[in-house]
Length: 367
Ligand code: FES
Image 1 (spheres, rainbow, N blue to C red):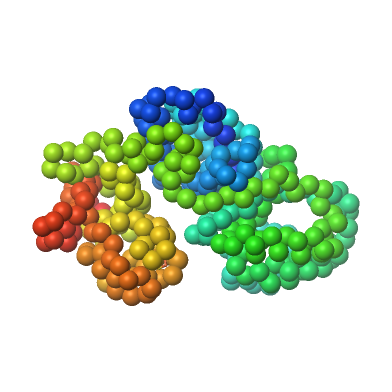
Image 2: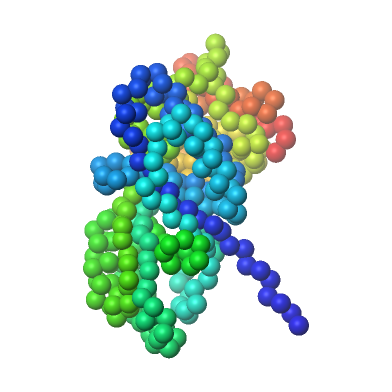
């Protein structure tokens, strides 16, 4: 008898943090070092978890930021929170909401929808907003014949397809946490989401909802931008404390953090810089697209042309020179100088006049 191979699932945590206001009265120096320590602690988990920061300052009063965490095992979630608890900033953070869930396939049949992601693997998009809430259905729902539930789910999906700009990630919490699902919708326009939810209220399935609050509207931003929303000394100040050497170079990563084909965002003197390892050669360019400030470290790389394509509107930049090669941007991005010392990647701001050096790629010795 053949048994079905076990499907790989992911564990997912939505952790909402609230900063104690007494932290804002600490000396600026301590605030800056606390942000640096906290940010670097999160970055140190980059290879182990998928971690997305979102800000809620100015949106909700009971939490300041969300860390959306996706891992292959529960131990990774425990390790991350343990490390955060040990930081100086962690001593001032409360966790008013924390939801645990897991990916799985739906029991309902949906015609193939290429616009929606696989339910087993979480792949967040670059959408500006994330709308999150826990969800519980009534027990009466589960007593309905499955065909009847499928009909109601079909209506639900039909309504959802009227709003293609909204992308849904459904994760399951049965037996793991208090709710049955955590739903997380991604989108660039809160008005689209509002209209979708309003319309779903009129669907038949909606009468079987037991609970779908609290609802969190979260703004995607870089880790350091998110830390800046907390107030206190800026993270730009914190990152500028990283050692810059007499030659102007700052160590920003190791090749272990940046294997061939990988990219990541780092900070140099408070500026966000996108690092790319293109077939063993490391390039560094300003992280913000000059068109509408998308994060280029999330863009796609064409190794043959040595370019990065912006994830938002497909602006194309040369990784060697920063020049615009296509799409809507009209201004180039800065191309940073890069060098390797052993396994360490060092970056320096573009210097003038040294254009030749700025364009000189750095080949990783082992990639
Ligand atoms: S934000 Fe990069 S092309 Fe528009």
